[in-house]
Length: 127
Image (tube, rainbow, N blue to C red; front, top):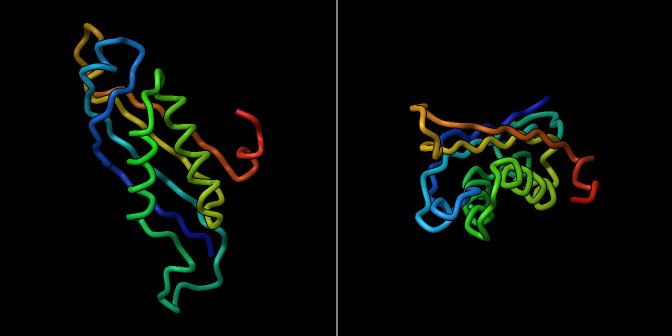
């Protein structure tokens, strides 16, 4: 059985961006995860060992986002993906989405979003 865990709409205030103003003032970001887990025969035993705690994933994304400012959403998403795959061996594939809610551009848009997809093989590739 293939299981997918999805988290959407994790809202964090952070200091990422290419511009000095973004790094000093900060802004709102939205994070999402789509994780494919190692195949399991069943979830009928109703124990977490066959899955991953959603709260633990959210805590890790929050921690990684707060570590240091990133210039690009791509680098932030990739770092989150690599660290989650390294920490949770039950994760097979992971898509990390990071959205900037108020990007510093002249046109009015709802958000800018970047998605990075990684699998277990990608974490052995040097950054």
